[in-house]
Image (cartoon, rainbow, N blue to C red; front, side, top):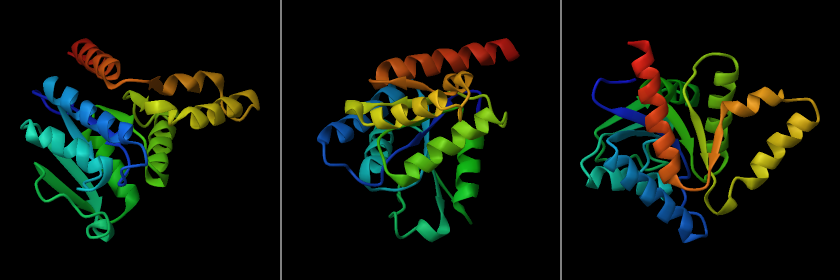
Length: 193
């Protein structure tokens, strides 16, 4: 665990809102449930898009919110001014590495290329043994269905080992995802004591 008192979940998600309000609503609900369960947020540090929605929801509840943003994106992504702490990095790779260090697990909500990059890198790091933290895909309104189909095609065609499908778990709703996360991390922490 990252700290004695609080779990932290890194959330990868869009700096845009998307075309369907269900994405914004899911980000808000995820943040609300995280706050209720005393799960801190580690995320990309922006004040815009569903990134901003989840951060603001947790901040309004008095929860810990850690942002990690490359200096180059400070103005482009509109860095959030009210975070518990905002870390700046020199590169995207350093951003993802620091997010991994600060977090007890990872969740992808709908987003674009940056979200896909973060999700695939964190799954690859698990595959290579750089971490054993849980990775979740929150498949709101079927957003990630084509991605899951593509990964399954990789298994079917022999490019991805079938066992690697266990490196991530897909959820349709935030509540069961956060229940599994809390139980998984708590159980692993108890076993390591």
